[in-house]
Image (cartoon, rainbow, N blue to C red; front, side, top):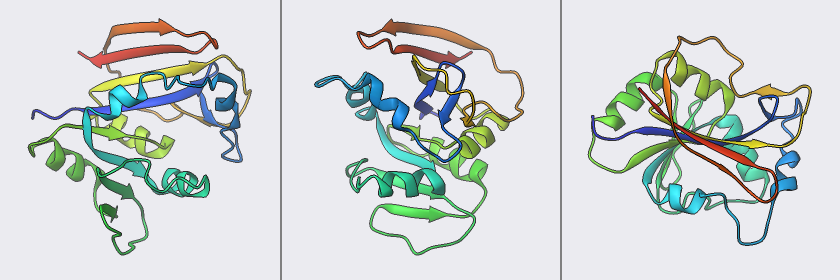
Length: 175
């Protein structure tokens, strides 16, 4: 398997990716004109995106329709829906999809969330790299990035970087 499954995500210092009502406005406090925290560089290394249906709906609700450009997108859903262009609504076994994608030629695979999808991938030990941006805020409650049980997985820190607005970014690879 040559392709890697990569996570590139932000969370609050206390480990939440959203508030309980799916509000992600806390991310706005680190917005800085001209700064994308390495996202452009990262997204250029992937040609396939996997995300959960709730995350997909959230992205659409923000008015973003072409966030992933011409990349193949798989929306993980329990309710089958017709595909739309390069977007496939996948209701099969996520493990089978990921293993199949990893065995195909291409660039890396990006998991853009959400918590349930990430949890399942961690339970199956399928995430190869993680870039986690820590936002300097304590939310106190919400949707945890690592809120589900999964087996222990050893990681190696590849890079850590702090930014002007207080965001700290950690890049790990599975060992």
